[in-house]
Image (tube, rainbow, N blue to C red; front, side, top):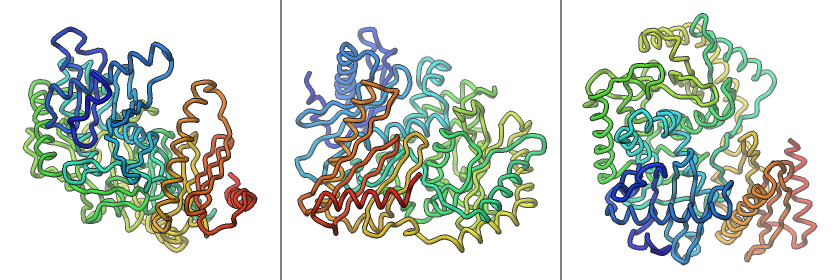
Length: 507
């Protein structure tokens, strides 16, 4: 079996498997936890996962401390991510000679990381699900519905349209923040204080967003990133609108197609079969009664007349009541939280309440909602009005002449040119930028393996075919990528342009 084991499958495949399972002959199928497309023949699924397992085992011989990240052959690119110990996610992408299919492994691996982080936030670690129910039927059911719903954002017909060179000025795994004046910051601080006191003696945590930008958070960094990502995908006004697209993430595609819906229903049925046998109501239970909760299913989320955003489960066939407010597992806080979402015009408030503090979940949530409406309404209106007056629109952070993305991986924040400006770049500029970012990704990976305690600085300026300047600069852990099409011909011009931009964003 060679690297062409996936050649018979048209398009991309995503698989999740557990290396601790299926080690006996004849039990190989047991290690498969998820596979897309779901209608792929079993023998072909085993072939793909067998190849991936072989690559992982082989690379560990030479580098036991570092995970395999990417393997490229003539026809396919295998992107690896060890989501949890011995639980691997692999994305297999078919190569096309057309330049438009140019893919960057860092962007593809970002999809794997994002999907796993969101899954763990709603359902807990995959390993915990497997330990609680060794047959893995429950874990497979949850993974099937959740990951399928996640991939629906990339679905075009029956194929996945993955990030290409056109997405070279976007960055998953980061938060985009709104810069506010001192006066507005004080109003926001007053609002978060009121939100924190929504449950008497227990402090509630909150995230406040304006449009698709983060205004404030009281959560730890990783938990903020996960909840922010979910809000951008499904909860903000732009995500709830008819097209469901956000300008922060250039997502294409929409709802899951008929085939996907059928396979999702099969996954839900697996979860329900386990649900009928085991009603875990302990504090550590996986979402307790939420065995069929699908947080990424677009058509189930809507804003009510009271301003609260909730999931509509009126048509669910799952037996027993399903709460309208999901329970989240926050890794850094190490606690389960109820999520309550309130929206006023362009302001979105994500209020998280410790599940252990509510004796009767839904009645307690109703109390919190009443408290929010009675005590925080005026603060919410004031903050929204002041943010709207000072908001410069989608082009608020556009820098004339530059098309850029500036990110800080350590703080997990980024700022970038709006999509309306990025699409003005020529294909040659975007292709060159994507290739440069790909080379930087590989170089960063090598540097991390050789010396993980120190960040390496880079500065690269190249001329594209259309004479545009393509620039990458990494300094003190921060990363800047930009394209300048209307500029001078000398390297001095490019260097000066980077310096001017850096002076605008000194931090």
